[in-house]
Length: 366
Image (cartoon, rainbow, N blue to C red; front, side, top):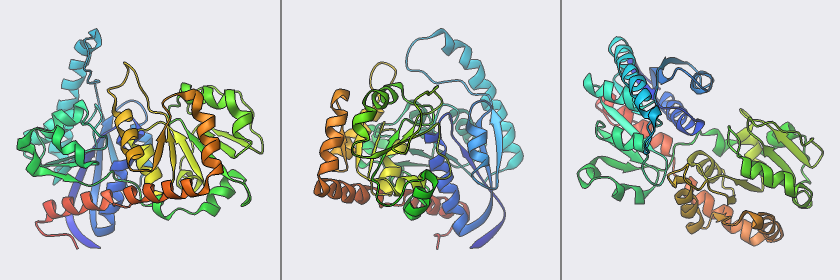
């Protein structure tokens, strides 16, 4: 490890774990190669601080954040004042801390710090995890020196003038998902080596549609698998048993639980699909649809289906049928697992970290 005295690197992003964990993966990759100080600018409300502080020696600063919406709402007017306050709070922090670079992982909290960094001539790098760039990334890219994307097809969705500064990296995933211990995962769950495991992921906030499907079809699902179910924060009254293991949220042991899993079911947020890919797991995906989403999960799911790593469950009533078919077809699951790993093998965290090192040191990372 090379030590660069007094070098500080700033990160921003938040609102959900999907905007934080990839940033933490880049932090880990960066710290493997250089000794530097890390600060993180996130929302002063919600889960941001608690997740970031678990990521190691990182100094967290909370700033006001207003949500960026694509639709007309009175809340937009009120949030303008939060966004302005976030800009000035972030600018004060950046001016005092003097980071060599700001890396943005997106989310509505990231735009004010990105603009603030630009106003102080601090280089900005930004990463987009989804197939199509979100509104925050579209704003941030205007002020960014480098743009990173998870998918090659995402490049064409930026203005042509930006293409020269775009690098396709895949999504940064914490290295533990590649090195996880399935024995530790089984020990955590209390499941022995003879049992097959189905992991159902509703995200940290839960997913009512998926939770309801599990509740309705639990007897059928447990014919094939021990069902490990991350329910999220929703109230849950279905009791645990030897073949059903509900958890509100699996934190440190999630990589190990995933390593022990035969098949993963869940939404198709960027964090879910790329962590499963890094672990080489076949997926049955139920993307979030409708007016409350811009369609990013549908796009993510279709990409992994085209790659052969996933099956998209377009009709939720077919979920049990699809799981039963996969449970009975060892060759199909093996082919999907191989395709999944082929996508997830690219180490986006280290690619981004190397680019950060090159920028702040003026030399290629070793």
